[in-house]
Structures are given as C-alpha cells and as structure tokens.
Image 1 (cartoon, rainbow, N blue to C red):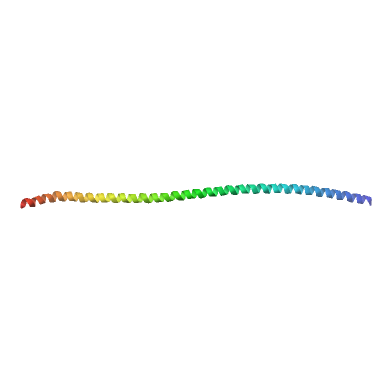
Image 2 (cartoon, rainbow, N blue to C red; image 1 turned 30 degrees about the vertical axis):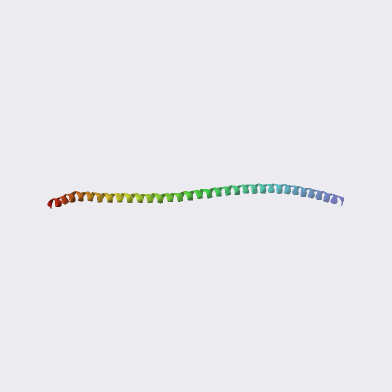
Amino acid sequence: AELTIESSAKSQRAASLQARAAEEIAAKKELRLNEAIKSLTNRDRQQQEHLLEKQHHIQRLTATIQRLQDELVESHKQATTALQQSVAAVRAENFLQVLVDEENTTAAGGGGGGRGKEGGR
C-alpha cells in the first residue's frame, strides 16, 4: 500500500512538474505572440502613414496636372483666337489690296477717259 501511495505521490509530482513546465512554455509562447502582434501593429501603422503620404502626394500631383491641363486649354483657346484674327487680318488686307488694284486699274483707264471727255468739251 505504501508503494502505491509513494508511486501515486511521484506521479502527482511528475504531473505537477509537467503542468508547470507546460504553463511556462505557454507563457513564453504568449509573450512571443504578444511581441509579434505589437510588431505587426507597429508595422501596419507605419504602412498606413506611408500610404496616407502617398495618397496626399498623388492628390497634389493630380491637382497640378489638372491646373496644367486647364492652362493648356486656355493657351490653346488664345492661340486659336490669335490665329483666327491673323487670318481675318490677312483676308482683309488681301481684299483691300484687290480694291486698291481695281481702283488703280479703273483710275488709270478711267482717268484717261475722263481727260478725253474734258478735252472733248
């Protein structure tokens, strides 16, 4: 009977030691897990900050591109207007030149005829 009690006590001590060892292992694993969670959380926060910076940078670039596009459209409108005015001026100049040429031709021919009429009087 004493052997059984002794054997039972040894078994209980062994089970107790195993339980304590298992608790220590579990505590160490929990500590490592908490450290890993903390590290991942910190890394995630840094990545979120970096992403936010990139988003702001993209927004600024998009605004700059939009402004440049608006300026380009306005410049194109101004250039088109200037070109249209230049074409109109050239056409008017050509038209006036034709009138002057016709006037000179008429004056040269008609002037001689006018002198003839006056001479006929």
